[in-house]
Image (cartoon, rainbow, N blue to C red):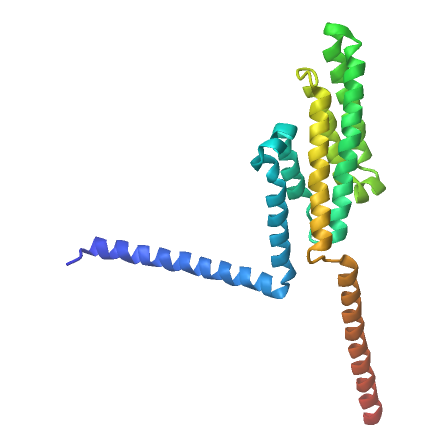
Length: 238
């Protein structure tokens, strides 16, 4: 026979299991509802998985890895942060990331060349001063309304890229090769996102906006029609 303590422990375990099972059932229902409400979300998840699989070839194939090295990870990171639900969102983020990477790398290389003119002792001081001025100015620029609205993500990428190139260039000798590899992998990752987003079950924000406007107009028409009928009834009563 089970002791009272054993029965109490079994009751606690059963209640805990019922709680966990309830949470799992609710999570499954929520997951199913998300996909049922808009099946394009399921397709979007598959598109992201497909794109990540394609850019992972930089690591799987030795010739590609030998060409790009550890910078191949930038292609994977680009897909993760750039791929949006709509084609327009993906295109905007890809252009922001690509342009900011080019600009940040170019200014970072220029800062390295300028700092090298200061000699062994002056180079760290000049580098630190340039990093302070340029990153501070770029951060302040992000508060401008037009930049905040359209290019805020690009501003972040510019700051990261410039800082990596300007600071790591003090210890890394092959800074040009490293910048070239990172830029190439970022552009390839962005290009893969754009191509998959456009040619594989594309989602256009303009089409969604058109459908939303049409639906709202129909609701407005029903409201006006109901208001007209109500006024007719009130006029007959009076």
